[in-house]
Length: 224
Length: 224
DNA sequence: ACAAAAGTGTTTACTGTACACCCATGC
DNA sequence: GCATGGGTGTACAGTAAACACTTTTGT
Image 1 (cartoon, chains in turn brown, red, purple, green):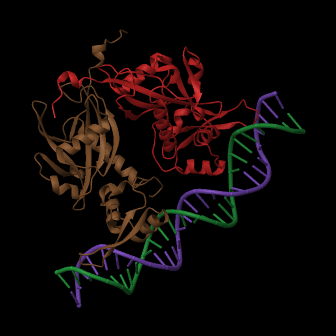
Image 2 (cartoon, rainbow over the protein chains, first blue to last red; image 1 turned 45 degrees about the vertical axis):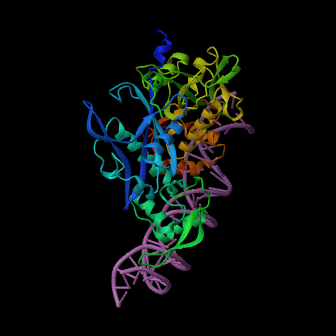
Image 3 (cartoon, rainbow over the protein chains, first blue to last red; image 1 turned 180 degrees about the vertical axis):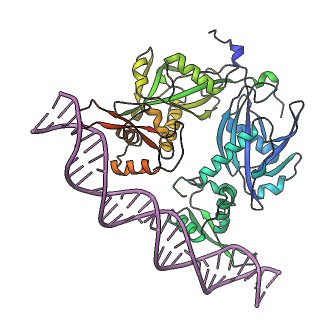
């Protein structure tokens, strides 16, 4: 078995791919961009991504690209998985570190239709470029799992929110209904949320009390 | 913002670092090797690792190095996390995909003291080379978490095992005692194990029935 | 007045937990 | 015969789940 030369070791181009979720109009959506690199991928879509530079970490690279491409400031970010199939990019060897990012729906309007990106329903995705279907799947699995034992849901919410809005996040992502009273009972028992004193008015119904998460950072516990 | 040249994009050396756990003499141990690259790391230890080659995936690279270095055949393997700090290797930019590997204790004897490797108690680790303390910590966290909702424990066991041995895995990794009857009740309720009909004799006590996992692959559920 | 979401407790079923003794073997 | 881990059931407590009506607002 021969030892590879120094040059042969620097074969890799490093990139990131980012699965950005939001909830918009009661639908879990993922941000897609157009991909057109004939003859491999013609008029397809994929998740946004970008190359890692020699002096930045993968995390920093994701933040840089998010800021630059769409002005997105992640409300939640975490590394998902590293994809290293030899042929995942037909143009050459690209190893990609995938990330999961959550943004509140407000972040949409600002850069909706900013060029070639758009938000797509996660439940009816087309065939995506590269291995991006697998990447989105990984993101969905992680999101669904973490709802059950962390406060990751705050990635979809504004700093202050109603308990109805929080419950809706759970119902949309997990595609099941929860009992309002039991849901709140658990939230309070775990001391996850605190009332801010404010209330949300404007809808044709009784005003809802506003809450915030007790800790700003993501907490872990047994919820579901 | 200038665009990096093609050369500048191939800055990275890709590597893997592998956290290999086993249980030996009722202690959770991790495989360490000697690291000696003056003036940065003199007479230190780290987890085994190796470079990824141009035509292999990260997974394949780990399997190749495991087989070559110590003849280890992983009983369980999963990707942990990708570490990309710019200065994690003082000799140059190395991005490393870390893996978690479990092996049954039998795998130890064959390559115990095969050169420069040895098994170290995970509860009293010294300062390791590079960022390897962080890598081992990540591995421990993943292992502990997955015991609670998967059959990952079979990574530490032979294909057939006694329920006492399985319970011992949980007690050693999670550092807490379980009630024998409740532990078994849950196992059976979830249909995780099936008796093989065989029994384990030889110890100075009543023979123990042998069991195997119902599914060979790792399953997921709510156990703890 | 009506539609729409907010808010609030109790009962019941289930699941988890605590607990102790006899058994079969090797030495 | 004694030390060692194997094997087994029940009672109680705590948690999860099911369930319905009143309130407050905007239109």
